[in-house]
Length: 380
Image (tube, rainbow, N blue to C red; front, side, top):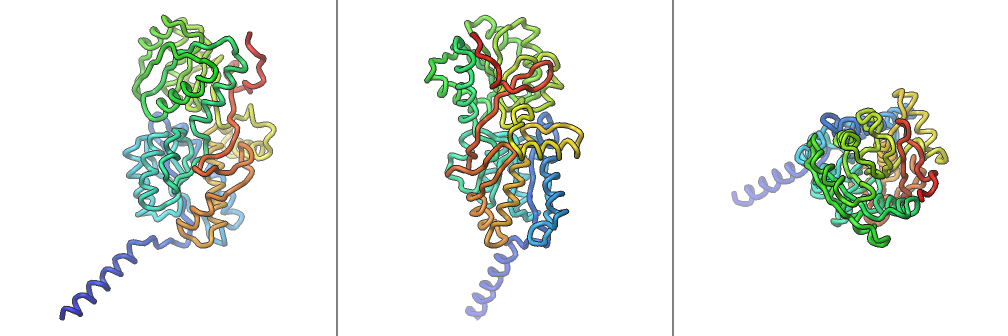
């Protein structure tokens, strides 16, 4: 009887274990999560549109090995706790092979812990916080360059174009995204003797920045650097103008979307910001020209940085599935690490942490339009 009991238990255990493994369907499921609602919905919308564009084109050409690609979209609202729940559902309920997302650093970082635990590859679309890829998590990769690279390139730009500017006020959202930008600027600026003469923070969702701007106005700052997403960034821009401040202004990739210009209006003019992609700075990249034409035809607008990052993310995900030895998450992860292709932002491949080796862009808003800031003369 004891032997029969043990045998029965072992058989039951095997059945349970087998049933817990992904039973991938006839379609190839790819999870796509991001802020499709809330104050970052414009970013999530760009992500979704770009992914849809690529998948529709690939499916029309026959899919992958004769199988159609099925995107499974999920809204994380830009919130870390919701990103965790969203990714868990995509992995366990929807049985996706790979996930693409999210947009914000806190949401991307939170989701990456689930990716590690479940051993499911994840491609971050917009999260730039350096620590996303420095925690030894081999399952997470990134489409955008990390904030340390973005900021280092911006610091070099400031030094080259504004050689007399050395005193800065820094205003940032107090989360992984904002703190990462601030710390990276301090570290990168040290080589040029840059000095932070005023550090100001705010909580995500704040709408009144007059106190911070007042302190910046009273400081000896020659320039202001702001690390915000587009919704708060537009409010800061308007209140900056209303306060009478007249400093050189530099911003983060969080405002690299047409929605920022739409919300800020004329207050956006004159701002320099670092970006992963801009139509104004990508005219010499063949894939970018093709991407812009396709996106404009499909949606009637030019793509922003988040659309480009998502376009490249889904492209590399498809390439990894095509190159994998077999259709499982581990094989796709191994193939993804070796991906190399011409992206919308230039020749693309990963370093050993899963970050892309790309050159960042710097944009200046002039008369409500993006221009290539690297073409401006040195400011004496």
